[in-house]
Picture (cartoon, rainbow, N blue to C red):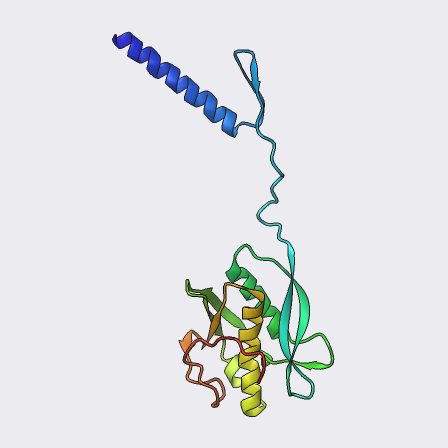
Length: 189
């Protein structure tokens, strides 16, 4: 009886090993004159290969009265957070078209970004965002909502944006708009 249990255990072990080889191996395995072929699947791209994505960046028109979108191609990230960071880096570069004005002050750098489970993106910039701000209340409005609108229009997961400076909440970016809470997009003013 004991020998039968040992034989049964050895057979189970052998079947497990052969099954593992069949699942993980790249070559055919022959068992009892039956050939087991690994399942052919679509080739996977290496994790370092990313696809390009078309994104819309919000800049202000030269007359300073409205937003206009400029389309750019970026390398797609593996996560929404990576995509958001790449999108904001493009926004800080300013427009490529001559009929649009930048909305982010020169010298502004994105320090960090994370997205919580409720869809709020927390975007942390250096002091350049606040210190380089010009153009009064309207300029502040366009700076804030170019960030909010750009993220919300490109990434479905983001519904609101909280702007931080040097890791801290700020009551206002330029003295006119309350930035102590996360803001939803606004496309028309």
